[in-house]
Image 1: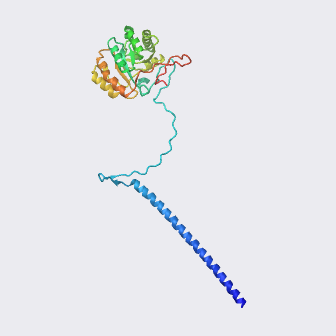
Image 2: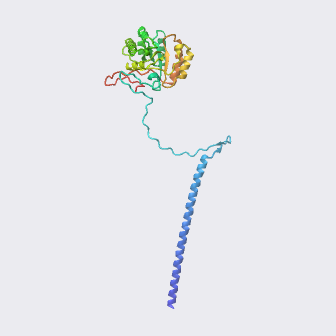
Image 3: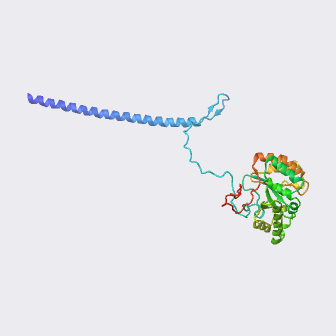
Length: 326
């Protein structure tokens, strides 16, 4: 029966083909299920790991010595890339140059009528008024030399005329010179502008006669009795009106301890300190310098106020530029 055998063989072939397809579909399903399980396990593990790390970073643990809770630091992060270097900054705040033959420091907000109350830099300036005095000025100069400090001396015209050698000594020691009026005239500011100018010019001429080649770059009004007129005239003459920050009122003779305490405790960066080396008995001030100079010298840079700018020589290369002018 050849026909019956052929039909039977075809049926067996179809059955084997169906079985193979069924097995393939099963294998695909199994692989898909396994892949889904693996992916789910990975996501769950990653999520649990993140939560655990955060929990460890914020959960306190007990200190073995005291049992008290102490925080556990999180694992260190890799160092961040260094920031690009910033442009170099000036070490100190500077004031602009006001120009040859003009006041060395500009007007300052807060000073009476725009007079200077600070140096404009972190430096501290000691100033001495009413000299020169034949007894006390040399003592003040000796103390300043001992500690290597430069200062500013505000000179009275009649004393300059009487003791010109002391003016030359002040200039030789590198201190800055300041006009303090001809006769320590507290009421000079209420005089006419012509009268003010005549007084200041007379005093400047006496200082320059005593110390040829020196500059008189500042004016300080006796008693701090500033007016708009005297500030304006002093600036017209190329001088910065010079007030102060710290005043121990040593002219009242409170004693060396009080003077030193006021100056040492009241001086901050940029301060201008008012002292006196003449105009009366200044032994308390001279004695106070033994405390003031080393104390302030440890905490600040002490300086003479910068002199004015001369007209340029050799194409400007010899301008005496100093801190506070640039």
